Image (tube, helix red, strand yellow):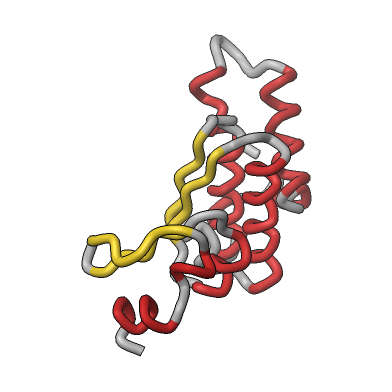
Length: 143
């Protein structure tokens, strides 16, 4: 709870408000992390730590989220949960999400737009089906 609450720090004046606690509890519930709320961060698995850090970002409630490999270290169920949550933020909360992912299957399934990079340069950009094709993937990855 304390690690996630750190994400609310910019909004906290002298003490926590009921709204801060409600936001944190709602995000913990959305990520199915309620059972970890009163545990010790250092005792969590790598995947659990990853989800807690994502929760800390989510409680900030910005208009734009920037995630760098948010699904690394997570099993497939938790990867899908995070990607579904990102889709929900885009579709239902009108948030923008920019995400770096190396899993092309996840990128294809959950992205509206894709930018494929090679050595820091844009190789292709656009709709997933037009970007993730044999030509572009071979150019970037060599396979």
